Structure formats: C-alpha cells, structure tokens
Image (cartoon, rainbow, N blue to C red; front, side, top):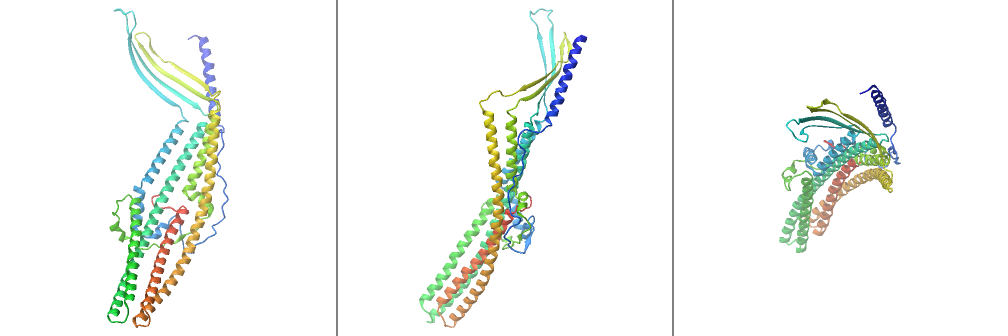
Length: 468
C-alpha cells in the first residue's frame, strides 16, 4: 500500500467511527410515540358498605378456615388444574418474546469456516492444486435512532407483566372457586344432617299416630298426614345429597381428581365454614391488589408502546454491517485478512398508506384497552360494594332466622305436647313441623351463602392464597 493510499484509509475510518458515535448518541435520545400513563379513574375514598366489626387480614384470610383438607385441595388444584398450566405457558411465551426483544438491542454475529481444493484449467502435470482455507465473522446491527426497538422491548416487558397478572388472576379465581364449592358441600352436609334428624323425629311421630289409631283415639287421615310429612323430609334429603354430590364433583374436577375419588375423604373436614370478613382495603388500593386490574393496565401499556413501534416503522432504518476473515491460499498467496464495513440507510418511499393504516390500527387498539382498563376498575369497586352489602344483609337475615327458628321450635314442641294429651289434632303438629323444617333449612342455607359471599369478597379484594 502506498503512502497516498494510507492517507485515504485513515479519514474514512475516522468518518465511520464518527458515524457510529453519532448513532449511539441518537439511540439514547427520546423515543418516538406516546409514553404510557395510568389512566385516572375516579373512585370513592372508601367503601360505603361495612359488613362487620369482626375483621381479618385480606392477605391471610384463608388461614382463618383452619381446615387442612381444604388447604390440601387448594394446593392440588394449583398443581393440576389445566387453566393454571395454560397460564404458566402463556407467561413462558411472553418471557421468551421479551428476551427476543432485548436481543435486538445488540449486534448479531455469525461465523463460518471452510476449505476448498481446486486445479485450474488447462490441466497439465505442472498445474498446481490450490487449497483455500477461509474463516470469517459477520456482524450486523440496526441503530435504534427513532426508539422503535426500545418501544418493542417496552411492549414485550409489559406483555410479561400482563401475563404474570393473568396467572395470578387464574390462580385467585381457581382457589376461590375451590373454597366456594367446598363451602357448598359443607352447607349441603349440614342440611343433610338436620334433614336426617327431622326424618327420625317424623318417623317417631308417625309411630305415635299409628298407636293412637290402633287405640281409636284418632282417624286415618292423621296417619296420612304423618306419612306425608315423613316422605317430604325423605325427598328433601335426596335433594340435599344431590347438591352435596354436585359440589364434590366440581371439587374433583377442579383438583384433577377422578369422580368419586374425593368422597371417602370429605368427612375429614372441619364442618361448616365461618369466615371473618376482611376490611382495611380502600378502593384506590384495588389498583395494585387485583390481578385483573394489573393485567388490564399492562395490556394498555403494551398497546401504547406498540403505537411507537408502528410509527418507527415509517421512518428510515440505519443498518451497520461488517465482515472480517482470515484466508490462506496454498501454495500461491498465503495468509491474508479481508474485511469490509458498510452503512445502509433504507426506508419506505411509498406504500399507498399501509404503514399509516397500521399506526391507526395500533392507536385504536390502545384506546380500546385504556377504556377496558377504566371499566375494569369501575367494575372492581362496584363488585366489592355489592359483596359487602350482601354480607351485611346476610348477617341480618341470619340473625332474624335464628330468632324465627327458636320461636318455631317452641311452637312445634307445644303442638306435639298438646297432640299427645289429645287437646289438638295432628294437623297442628304437621303445620308446626313443616314450618320449623323450612326455617331450619333456610337458616343453614343462609349461613352457607354468607360463607360463599365472604369468599367472593376476598376474591374481589384481590386476596392472596398459598402458592400464589
């Protein structure tokens, strides 16, 4: 190489270095497209309904159940439920997308090596056989001068956060459903226990009526009424057991068990569930606690970042490529080191509005997801209010039914005694027992409904469960 040629190489190298430095500076500038800001949704300062002064922590309310079987079923559901496993795979895919988006910030390197043996023509005994060995590395890097690559990475990370919130939401919904079905089973179990007691009592009453009929102290229609009352309770027992079986089958499905596999173990539970009501969560705190709200927020953030990606696609792209190698040609040339550096600027000159339409589409999708976030927040606040109100009215209903049961039980005892000494007909006894039976079942059902409403409240507050 001549001195003149050396003078020409140096300025070009310097110019390329300056281009690289300038590009790096541009890449650190602000990014094209809007930045995400959490939409402001007006919420009340506090919930208007209050259910009770007996409260529990939202994050640990499940510990108040004290039921080892339910805790085991919760973990079994988390381990085996297909919805949870599907959400885990969605999260895995989102993390892979985020990893790929991070990788675009760095150069891509490729390498190759090979050897070639050849003889030139015309072939003569003196024609040498040349052996060429070549090894080279290629590199390419797109300068993020507009921030499109960074916006893409931002969107991918928001997608990961949305998938994490989605997994938490699926888990929360699952364990809440397990707890609700378990409460339904215990309610049906309690109803069945009382119905059996009622059947035994009515069987005894039916025997008394038979004895009185044989003694000529009553008529056959009283025996018919006694038999009707007995069969009514027996039919109610079958209906109650059906409700219990339905709840058990739902539990088996949720926990990945075969039908009937859970039946022998259901007697290991603690009986009816009495749950303290959680408080201490303000409406504004739902924005952080509820996974569905966090998911909606991250989905909106992802959509906003994708608007920036679409806008960057309309602008020119700056791509750097380079190659360096080592070549040995034997026996003619020997080792030498070829290299090349290139800078390319490319962009769309005319596309009939395709990229502009893509920006419009992404912008509309972002606006939709922002409105969906707003609706999710509003629905969450309303759901908590509804659950609190339901619990408050449920407690009032239970208190009234407990008083009614006490009065109906006293009325039934009086009617049985009056019938025993012949002061009244069996019709009065039948009516009193029918009313008492209905009131007792209503009380048991109200207690079960209170338990499921409390579980639903904890879910609405974004309650945490083991393994979540």
